Amino acid sequence: MTARAAVILAAGQGTRMKSATPKVLHKVGGRTMLDWVIDVAQDLGCEKIVVVIAADAQAVAAHVTARLGSDAIAVQDPPLGTGHAVMAAKAALAGFQGDVVVNYADGPTLTAADIEPLFHLRAAGADVAVLGFEARDPTPYGRLILGAGDKLERIVETKEANPEELKVKACNSRVLAAPAPLLFDLLSQVRNDNAKGEYYLTDVVGLANAAGKSARVAFAPEEAFMGVNSQAELAAAEAAFQDRRRAELMAAGVTMTAPQTVYLSADTQIAGGAVIEPFVVFGPGVTVETGAVIRAFSHLEGAVVRAGALVGPYARLRPGADIGEDAHIGNFVEVKKVAVGKGAKANHLSYLGDGTIGAGANIGAGTIFCNYDGFDKWETHVGEGAFIGSNTALVAPVTVGAGAYTGSGSVITKPVSADALAFERSNQVEKAGWAARFRQRKLAERAARKAKS
Image (cartoon, rainbow, N blue to C red; front, top):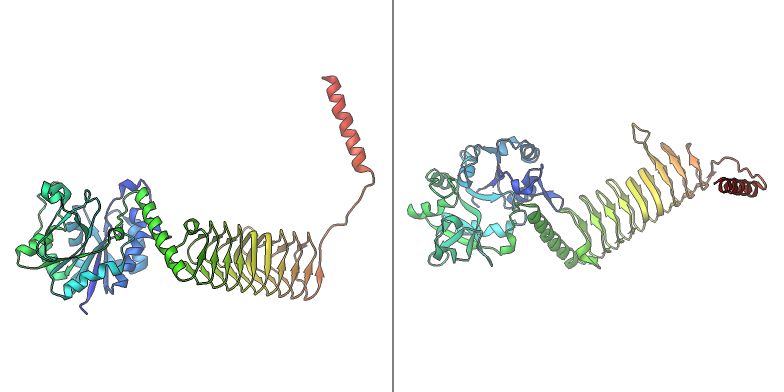
């Protein structure tokens, strides 16, 4: 297979987003748009990936460096159009003789499968391969002017198109592939004598034909092309991702009673046989095994839910929560960085942070793992089969042994031995008749105030 490289254009200013966050770092499915596009390049087998950024895009540069290294960055300065942006990547691809695909960092819905046909065209002899689509409303897009078969004669930008060309519904996706030497040779010939005064990448098609080279088109569904330039378009891309991912999970056997209310992340893993009730949100890093039930209005992030476990309703699982097989985490229970053993239960109104809960243990309503002293986090360990009475405060670091009990309302600060009962309460004091005398006194005071007024 011919070697492949990708140039990802990420230098747009994104002013229509009206956000301090750079456009390409906005997220779809909890993952930045730029990462989605890098994923596509890697899925295509690109051995080199170059991301073209603006001169002042420090946040984007840091993101690219963390993922691909600083060698993957090319800077476009000043911004003079898409052709100029691709030329900015020339130095980073010095010596590369394979095929280059040009893609855009604001197109998170386009997949490797959508782009792969470009390389098929290249293998079949096309010098330049362009990805297009048939638009229901072609008004905003550049038009693909086709000859016989799939021959592409030229691409005309909307502002440059004549009335006949504007009737064409075959539209340019902006994505193309060509051999690196040819691509950069053609780009060196591009001129900016157009309505915008920019160097258009699309001009390479006409230049290729003029040089006796061949240009061909591959088509993908219009729905694959959702460029994001505003918050509304970002929301539309998010909705498209959610719809697609829900459909994939249901096809794999996941039950969703109201799928349109379930929100997923790019890396959410849910096994067939799991049940997801309405209004559940999955943040990044969640795995749900078969037979588990996530009940309504729960929020999960960075958590594992083992087979047969029951979570919710109104539960919150934070990073590090590991809910064991057949365990129960009930309403208004928050779990953070705690491994909950098989069959353990925490059914009501508890905070469980940092530690472990043994198999079969029961955590009473109102239990708190007091894990933070204002500076450091400490762990609480509850043994197998232990019973934690309601409204127990377990002050970490502390261990409750297997089979031990704590009395309701206790503040446990010391280790509890296995099978022991630990409780900590002040003595109850009863003052006979106090309540009646109190009421009489307060009623008399109220009557006196009314008499004065």
